[in-house]
Image (cartoon, rainbow, N blue to C red):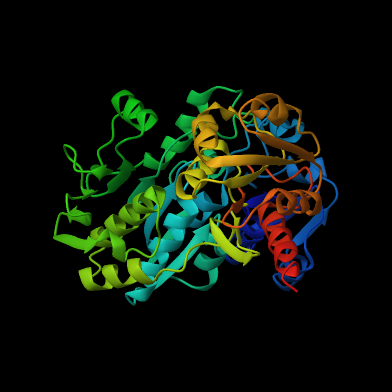
Length: 449
């Protein structure tokens, strides 16, 4: 029997993990990355005796594949992907590949906002309860690499719409959609329904033994549930008790979670994470843990001692009476809405970066209520300046993080909050949202010396 030839496109965490797993399963593997591959990944590929290239795509090698594993960041419309499609070579995601080689339970989490916090919180609860659990997807190590080398009983997997696009037979045991708001529309022909369809792929292959956890108040999720059918058991959550809600807060402000085998009750004030969006994150994580039969006292303890996610409403410092908050992870408008919902009045908001077809009207009412000044920080701030100039008293145009922070410090008075919650992708001035957040934190901290 001929050895299966697998080509992996992309030499980052997921691509290298997929290549190593495929090699261990006896496939003939070739990895190709149009950009540069990080030294640690080159070393891992060399140690596994996997052939790789960087800075180019050798099409003769790639178009000879039996199957292609594609990095989520590569759009299906690139010339190379169109040639692969023309040859009818199947294209899958790293998650799809990994799923073929494990029988572990899968808790899969997606959404436009809140998915990283919910993923980390769910993982924290399960790990704290002594479960042999792995963290994968957009956070943690590649699922494929863990399947190759670690073997966990449960995986908590954060999935973007891009990852879901190339998943076919993979299935979740617990699927979670936090919310759906416009994001990445540049990838989906500016058609919101295409993005919604990609997100809802998380429900494919679910059976009546599986669970779907979702926010009941999301009109887009509600509308899509009327269009499609799923066999999964439904576990909606909402701020207050509604018909069929499985998690909500009662009149005394207690968090109530009703799972099939148990009811959990704890004061909302005991939750480690504050704000309405974090209440939803806690509900989704708590429901997931209940469905995996984690003891109630373990869930309560973990929900009250979780330390949060870096770059997500992360307190940095207070200097001269001004609080600085790093929310660099807010790469879309709805994320910024949640951030503004949780900060006090007299906030100075730093916005800007690579616009993904954003509609800023969603945050306009909160900007009016909470924001005294906007500092734009991007290569091109025209769209932001056009939209917000008549909506705030002060608006500034800067083109670097240093100048943006300097401008905030000039405007800020004692008692104000400076919030970096950019609404945009980071790629105009930074390597990633993490890089943007790190630079912001280091500039703020250096002001205290």
